[in-house]
Figure (cartoon, rainbow, N blue to C red):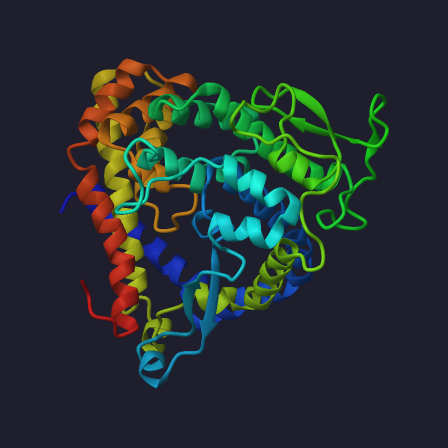
Length: 440
């Protein structure tokens, strides 16, 4: 055994030990629980700012693009939990999480009928484009979203605002996706700016049933429209913009000059189009906040799940530690292969610039191999030409050489499918085995 290989094995074993101690051991789980307890109040406060923003921002896509609410993420990301039965507990299961579709996540027509005032329902439903339904729709009287485009709208558009606080990174990611999927540039820009406006309105212009007391500023009156408030937000180019807004529904759905695209907005009355008493939309976000608060203290057992007593005591026996080690070994192998290829392609590269190309390859593997799917399904849904186009566009816009990226991609595509399948299967099969569910 070479000295380098022995050193690598020793280093990986040390990292597995640290991983086990911090996350999977009894002391590690207790430490996580105490940290969760310490930050509980702060996290609940933050949730009252973040959850409504992404809830109502996602909701805007429903009417504008005819998407059912139970499809929209993160609006539909809801879980219930239960304690394990005896067999599950003996297999190391500490808590069982199950995804559910919340009551407020309805189809779009039901959403309109439950939440929009009666006098406006007919106008909205009559102008909504018809999506094709197999066996029901007539040819030529409906349309079908391309799969990857639909996933961009359904799961990725809102995620980009959370994932990339940097305007440059956000624009690069969005632009690359738009070009790869052949989405209309103006529609994509409109989506970004509208979502940015909704999120900004939450704290910059106090809005009834949306903003939080003591966190939101009172609206600054518009100089030309005194009954409207000014909402300032950052557009896709990083410029500070402002719009006159009367209420939440305006930023969600209204035709707004220099923001909206025709056919993807509604002419809005000054009156609120949402019905009040009952208010299902508002109740939905309140339910989501309550469920998040109730689940938060399950963070520790959730992160330390699927560990028997003997596994918690000895990292050599812990299956999760071995899986983590396999994934880390795969990552190091990818980095080594990419580094060797770069030594041949561009031997003059310094370590800093070389790391950028290695990170690009790791991102390609990660985006289509995420087990936590929110925001990444669009990448999984792309055909190979779209995936390659997106990746090249994204990283060349970040300053990397396109010719080098193309050669790295050609190398990566020979093994990426098997690596992604292994990455996804390891964790999935462990969960199924511990819960006693037959493997596929």
